[in-house]
Image 1: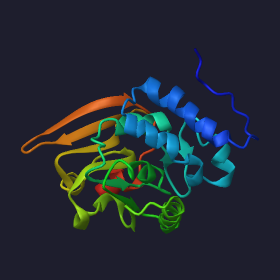
Image 2: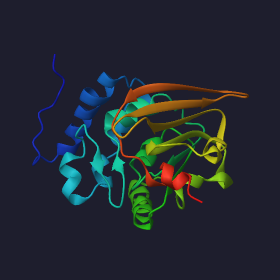
Image 3: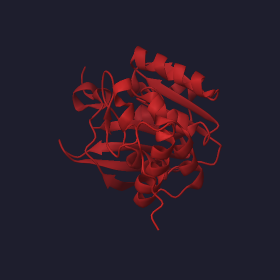
Length: 229
C-alpha cells in the first residue's frame, strides 16, 4: 500500500503533506528509526528556515544553499547522522555552523539544552528570530568563530558540525563529554566526504563511517584555515 500523499503546492496543507512524505520517503528508508527523532522531523517546519524563493523545495531530498556559506543538509543525511546520538530528552548539544537554526529546532525536543554556534551575524539573528517564532526556550544562539567551539559551555553530549571538515581541532574534541558523540563529514578528497560518528570513552575514541556524501567543506575547518599562522 502506498502511504504517500499527492501534493499540490497551492493547497493550504502543502507543507504538512510534504513533511509527512519526507519522513516516509527519505528518512525511514535511509535507516532513521528513532521514533522521537522522526516525530521531530514531522513537526518542525523546515520551510521557516529558508529564503522565500527556496520554500517550495524545503522538503526536497537535496542540499540547499545557505546565505553567506555552506548548505542545509538534506533531510536524510541529517536524520541518519542524528540516529547515532542518544536523543532521550536529556543532555546538552552544540551545533557548529547551524545557520538559521533548523537542526537546533529539531534537537530542542530531544535534548535538555541546545547551543547553536554561528559565525555570521545575520544568520545568528535569524536563528534567534526563528526560535522565538517557535517558542523554543532551551536553544541558545551564540555568534563566534566556529573552529573554537564553546569551551565555556562544555561539556557536550552531542556535537554536530554542519558541513565537511578537513580536520577537527583538538579543542572541539575536548569539549565532548565522556560517552559523547561528535558527528560531521570528513573530507577524503575534493569530491569524497564521509559522514562520521566519533564517540569519546574514558581513555579512547571509536569512530565509524556512516555513508558518503558530497558536502561542501566549511571554511573554518579547511586545511588553509587550520594550519595558518
